[in-house]
Image (cartoon, rainbow, N blue to C red):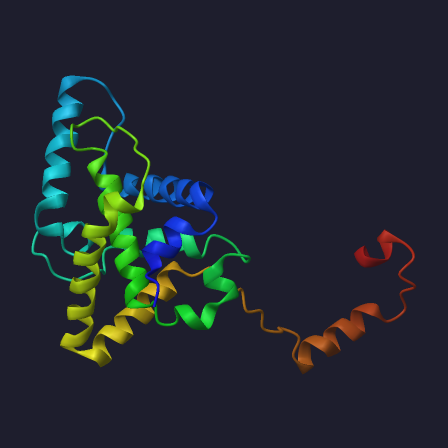
Length: 204
């Protein structure tokens, strides 16, 4: 099977890479990085970068305690931005393939987040182009970690991956009819004696 990161990097070339990078870069705002050139902000960004990169804790629900593997909001935010952006996105069109979110997809998301974090390594964001040769090694590590996590308790991790999907998915906007029998009778009474030809009839 071709890995998700390979498909991500190869399919439709740089346009897809650029789209994914842009979306995930935008999601990183959740961490609190600031685009300011003053020394204090630069130091703050650099310390934040080091904190998030230590033991790859950036994707945990509890970053400090490293609890909640892949359950950090950043993961569902990136999933929504890249695969569930709108009704025509792959995650919506091929929804059954994303329920639950495949382990490979989570690994791909973590890989790109990690790459985008490295752009802040100096305390000032330096945007880079994501080439496969630059991320393939880190993707292998994330893929192995995600697979190990999935294997620890398949039932629970499947439920978590379903929850991640639900948090990142576009709202299906299911509409339920509110016109019950009583409401229909009320509407019938309101329309009694009207022709529907003038606006003033509704005010009488």
